[in-house]
Length: 303
Image 1 (cartoon, rainbow, N blue to C red):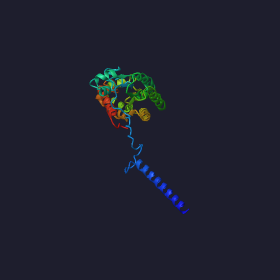
Image 2 (cartoon, rainbow, N blue to C red):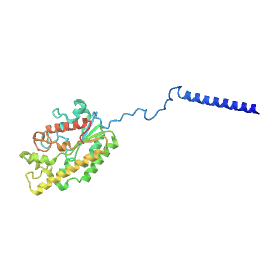
Image 3 (tube, rainbow, N blue to C red):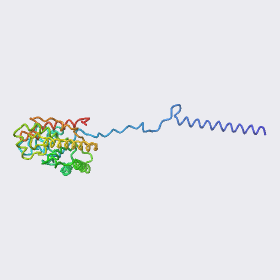
């Protein structure tokens, strides 16, 4: 009995030693001998994808929508459009439009389009945008809002809520067809400052009597309380419009507002039309093109 128990214990000890040796061998094989075991792929080891740039400063095509300023109104002759000097799409070498600066003269001739209309208000923008989408531009410029403030009277200006709704509809119209097209939005010019600058010119004031921006320019020499209040009301509405442009644009990753650059720009006599002393001259159009080019090319645009 004692020998049997001894042999049984020996068998158990031997089996245990074999089992432990096999386990050690398996662990050694799994770890590659004395080297640490290879790690499996982890999120930390995977290369991070390169972020897609939200803004491309080198678009291949451009379309413009807006009002008389983008049509070059009164820049070449009295009460007439002159799209060849447009800040956005013009071909005049003295202006060097945004399209020319971005695309070069030859490409701009075939790959830029002007859908702006003199007299257009924000309510007209969705239709213009719809026309522009057919060309599938990589950049769309927007300059609109001056005519919403320039009405027969301050009371007839476009309400701010309506202005917002029309601009939002314009952006929806664009995005339904062109989700990746970039948008450059300019602020509405400082109409009160244009009145202050132009009222010293007798010829300009005669043209104003034909009905140009009556809400601001009517009775240009009047300085009574009523006239002062009227101009302040128009100015306040322009400021409100610009806030709408900024806010709506900020909700779209591919939209840039000019940060008030056009509103802040101090147009002088050489940069205003010598027919109406209100719209930009060729020189003024060139300055607008320069402002736009800086914003489109900027890494960090003006807020």
